[in-house]
Amino acid sequence: MPAVTDPTPFTGWLQSHATRLSHLDPGAPLDDLEPLRDLFDGARVVALGEHSHFIDEFAAMRRRILRFLVERCGFTVLAFEYGFSEGIPLDAWAQGQGADGDLSALLASSVPIGLAEPLRFIRRHNRTAATPVRFAGIDIPAAGGSLLPALTPVADYLRRIDPEALPAVRSAVAIAASFAGDSAAVAAPAWARLATTEQDTLSALLTRLHIRFRALKPLYLSRGDQQGYDSTLRCLEAACHGDYTFRAMAALFAGEGLTADTSARDLYMAESLLGT
Image (cartoon, rainbow, N blue to C red; front, side, top):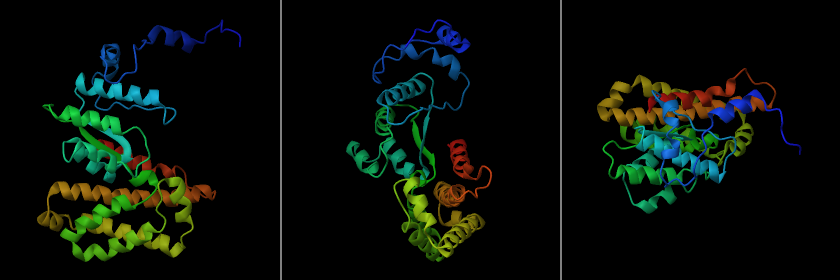
């Protein structure tokens, strides 16, 4: 391949602005990341992305930048593209609950997306930190693969707070279990194979539960606390957004999708991020 002799404008810009990194060791000194400080100045949210998953070097770099953001810039939340409901026990673990070895069981059903080491770093950091770092999942359950991780805590909450609503959530769980998978690629086709009556019944049940949950807020708060209400409502909303996403994806694959209809999942993640 011939050498490039006529660099593009971007090449010139990159050569004048790039900073060479010393290493990728997440535990080594962070001084070579100091040029990032000016980019982060005044930011409440810093987004870290990658153009390919499961690349070790990208994961190592994310861990280095996480350390830099926490230790040198004072950031206090790691928000991850991970189920909101599934993230609740992970945050409890990161705050010090349970034993160090419990993490493997908590992540056992998850796709290996490089979350274990960042969580271990947060747990170690929080042992001595004046301001602990929280973990927050911001996505719909199982990355769109199942509604069950969101509906299970809803059922547990209603069992204590509103037993009259339990039949509705149990019916929703039964339908959701019939097409649950470990990813949207598995669950979406299974949802599409359900009878239309089952699809519509699930949507109706979730809508009724959501409206009842909001309408009875004063009653629910009189029987429980604000944190429990807010967290469970967000789980229920995750199930609603997940259900909507199944419909949107099915219509898209059938050539009948509405404009930007699959953005329901993106909206849920954005609202989750704002709520952290």
